[in-house]
Amino acid sequence: MGFEIIESSFPMVFSHWKTILKPIKGGTLVSQDMEYQLKFGILGNLMDALIVRRKYKKILDDIFNGLKRYAEKDK
Image 1 (tube, rainbow, N blue to C red):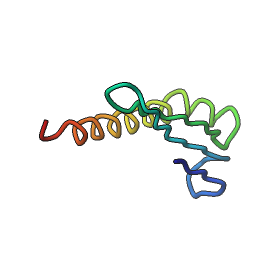
Image 2: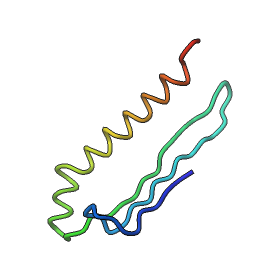
Image 3: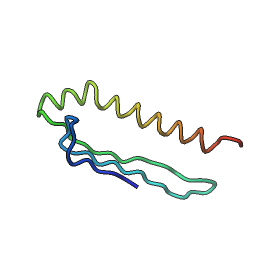
Image 4: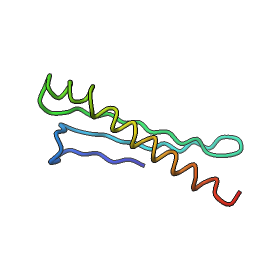
């Protein structure tokens, strides 16, 4: 499952985000593969290093933690 942003009001040239579900013994391994490029050249790279990368990491961590809580609920 995935999505791709090719045009946005956000300062992105593109974004590809894929969720991978892999069956493993006793459950499912869920992983994310994300690739993106910000607009504004060097300034965009600086924004990525200082703000965007951390923000995306927090979003992904929140998604995985929520999924884990949901999957383990009522066990």
